[in-house]
Image 1 (cartoon, rainbow, N blue to C red):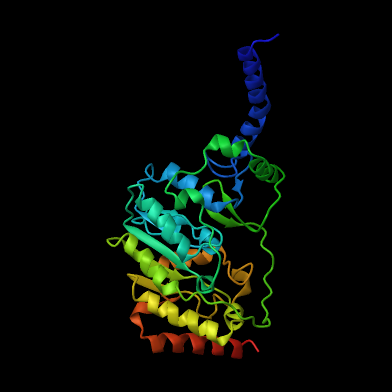
Image 2: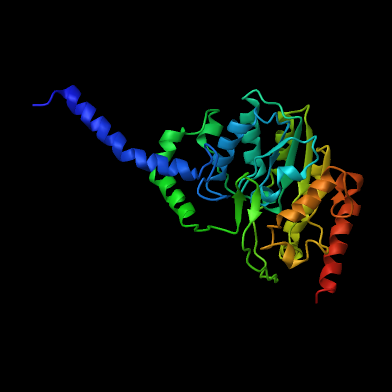
Length: 328
């Protein structure tokens, strides 16, 4: 009869031998960016970006001596940090479906790590003004650390992610290169059209949420921009929703150091070739945005803080009416 210790040793060794291939397979593809991303080819898919971004943040923030952090939704993932002026050594913490209520939690978590960014860039989306569920990970809420690499890469979920990378089974046109910069591969053709308007539940807490966000690092410089969207998307909004969106944006702009709006209908937002849907614009558009918000270029977007509310609302209304008059 085997001794309990010998039996336990055999079971332990057998378990390790069985699980090791799964762990190293996942480590090679690194779908959640614990180490250096996909080693099979120079692409990384947007799997669980809240965790992937956090892993990358923890690995790179001190090493790169960053002084800036950026938050936004999937749209902002296509805003590459290298587009910014050199004084902004920025980490792009944008993730799919991100909203202001989540940025508060993530910024608080960053603050509790003893990190104080000099600059904070916030992408404001029209979706932020609609009531939505938020998805903050427990480790952010509890001021902890993400699941460790061994727990994660011994899971079936990670295995399925790695198999998708192996098979180059894209989950969407938006992805990341080997430097974790947002790219778009083989985008579908965007064919804009007007749709039946649907009622939405508005997020009446949005202004207070941005106030809370701005109070986390009161000494930092907060730069915001309204993400570009298709004129057709803007036109598809019910009037009370569009009014709430624009009035709220103007109110919020008064709290930021600067806030630029790139959602005003025009030649750039109205060109279907610049986007693969009604709200995800290609990376070269974000290069233009970076140049504007760092005062290198003018002409695309407006600095709301230089306008009265009436001027801002009139600009939006007249631009929308003029655009569709020319596209009848």
